Length: 245
Image (cartoon, rainbow, N blue to C red):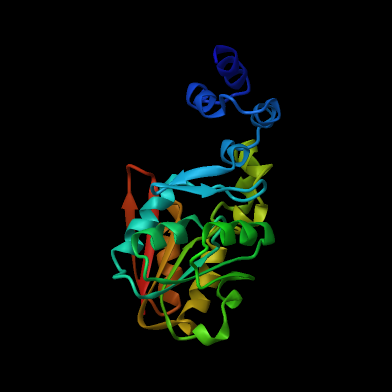
C-alpha cells in the first residue's frame, strides 16, 4: 500500500492515501491510468454522489459533489409525481439522485454527447427517457408546456479558462461539458430562452453556475421572462440560480 501511495503522490494526487485505499487490489493497468492523469472516477468506473454510486464511463464528465446543492434545491420543489427534465445530464447523476428521493417522478434526461447518453441510460433505468440532443430540443415534442421542473448543471467554464483547468478535466472530459462560452453563461442563456416553451405555468428552471456568475445567470433567466433568484452554499462552493414562470 505504501508504494501505491508514493506513486500516486508522485503523480500529483492530493488525496493519495484515500485513492490508494480505493485502488488497492486494482489491476496495474488501472493504477497506471490514474498515475497518467485520468480522473479517479473514470478509472474506478463510479463516483459517489448524493449517497449513490453512479457509473462513470471513460471520457464522460465526472459529477461534482457541489451539484448535490442543486439536487437539494430541486427536491425542495418536488412532491414526487412531477415531470422533470435533467438537461446536460452527463452521467445522469442529478436525475438519479432526484429519482432515488422521489421515486414517482417522471424523469427525462438529455445530453448532446453520445457517450454521456449511454452512461446515463445505465444509471437511469427507471427514467421515462434519456435523449440525445441539444438542451431541451432533445426532449419529445409531446412534453412542450408540460414539464414541471428543468434542472441543469450546464457547462460554465469561460472558454479562455478551459486551458487552465487541471489536466484530468481538460484532457479526459469532453470540452462541450466544460466550455460555457465567453463569460461562461452562454449555455445558460440558450437554456433560459428555450425553457418557457417547455415548462408549464408556474414551472421552475434551476441552473448551477460558478459563484461569480450568479448575477449574470439570474439576468439571463429574467430576460427570458422568469422571476429569478440566486442561492449560494459556501460549504460546498455551489451556486444555483432559480427561475419560476
